[in-house]
Length: 211
Image (cartoon, rainbow, N blue to C red; front, side, top):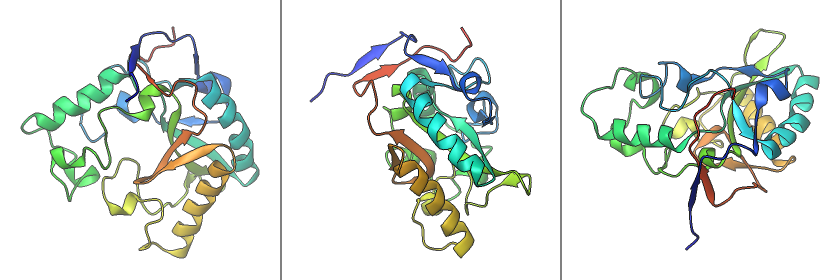
């Protein structure tokens, strides 16, 4: 079994929004509109951090989407380990289910771990990203047949009970990412990880701040 390192070194990370001005940010864990219902530990500023390698890979895909009329809207990338620990604590607490109907209507809090949320997340290695596409023509998010952080079968990337348009939108997203060095997550259509991630055995825990 590999040794797992926990690090506070942010030297290999960059601010994605500063590096790629064309992207949109919707940093859900900085807000209270998320499955926990409160700002998550470690999200001290509404910015997106990621490894330099993830950023360089995204610089290749953002223009591809833009040429088709879409902007990239990012929900999350680097996630401090303290944030994942926050998720775990919340799952064991009684109550605090204000957003159950929006995010996990068919599950109990403790049941979302493993399939949807894991205690050691690829996000904490800095090379995973959660995002959707924003249609510049309609000025709306592209219809993916489901919403970010919805815990259920509808979020599976290849879920079949969708309209043809929704299926095609997901397949388009998936195709571009696969062709540019990313791996899809099996239970979340919005989640992609860099195939050749720079820190495969390191989980980071520095807070999300500009400096």
